[in-house]
Amino acid sequence: MQSLQQKASDWSGVKQADAFAIDETNLFEKLGLPTFICLSTNFYTRVYDDEEEWFRSIFANSRKEDAIQNQYEFFVQRMGGPPLYSQRKGHPALIGRHRPFPVTHRAAERWLHHMQEALESTTDIDTDSKVTMMNFFRHTAFFLVAGDELKNQNQGASNKSGASKPAAV
Amino acid sequence: MQSLQQKASDWSGVKQADAFAIDETNLFEKLGLPTFICLSTNFYTRVYDDEEEWFRSIFANSRKEDAIQNQYEFFVQRMGGPPLYSQRKGHPALIGRHRPFPVTHRAAERWLHHMQEALESTTDIDTDSKVTMMNFFRHTAFFLVAGDELKNQNQGASNKSGASKPAAV
Image (cartoon, rainbow over all chains, first blue to last red; front, side):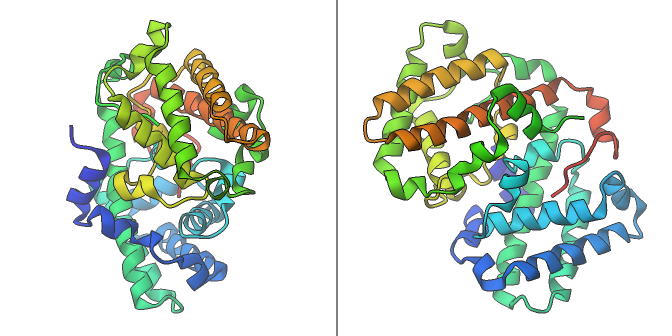
C-alpha cells in the first residue's frame, strides 16, 4: 500500500524534501506573529466569502474567528514559533481533526487557490518564503486528501491487528 | 461533543498543561539522541516480548527496528530536536497513522506500563524528565484512544459538511 506521504507527493507534485523545507529556515522568526495572523485572516475572509457554495459550506459550522486562530496557531507552531496550538488544543493530529470534513482533491485545490491569493495579498511575505510555504501547503493539502480516503476503507479491517501495514509510534 | 483533548485529559488524569510541559524544557538537548534511541529500544524490546499475546499481536506486522525508529524520531522531533520524523515520513498525524491499530483503553494502559518500565530502565534520564515525559505519554495515549473511537462513529456523518463540530486548520 502506498503511504500517505507518497500519495501526498504524487498528487501534489511536491517532493517530501521540498514540502519540509519549512524546517530549514525559521519562518516564524523571519515573518513574525502579526504576518501569520494576517495571512490566516486573509485566507478565511476569502473562504467565507467564496462564491462556490460547495466549498464555503464545508466551513459553515465553524466560527470564522476560531478557524483563523486554529490555523495561525498551527502555522506558528509548525514553522518555528511557540507551540501555541498544542498549549490550547493538544496534538495537531491533522488527519484526525479533519475527519468531519470532505477533503477531496477538488476541495484541496480550492483551499490552495485561496491560500495562494491570501499569500499574494499579504505584502510582507518575501517571495522565497511564499514558495516554501506553498510547497508545504500543497503537499499537506494532498496528505489530507490521502488521509480522507482512509475513511472509505473497510471499517472491519481497522479492528483486526495486522490488517494493514502499520506505522506505529 | 467533548473534544479529543478533553477526553484525553479526563481519561488519563493528566491536564493539558501538564501534558505539554514537554515544551517548557528542551528534553532533546537535555537528554541527547542516544538516550532517545535507547528508550525506544528498551520499550519495543518489552513490547515484542510481551507475555500478553493480545497486546504483542498489535505490532505483529511491524518490524521491530522500524517501530523503534518511528518512535524515537517522533519523540526527538516533538521534544525539541531536529525534525527527523517529518523529513522521512511527513506529518506525524498521530490519529491517522494509528488508524490500523485497536487503540483501546486497555491497550493504552499496557503501552504505558511498558513505557514506564522502559523509562525506569533507561538510567540516564533524570526523575524530572521522566515525570514530564510520562505526563505527555499518558495524555497522548488517551488522546489516541479518543481518536480511535472516531472510527466507530457513523461513517455517513463524516461526508456531510457541518455534521459535527469542526476543528479546521
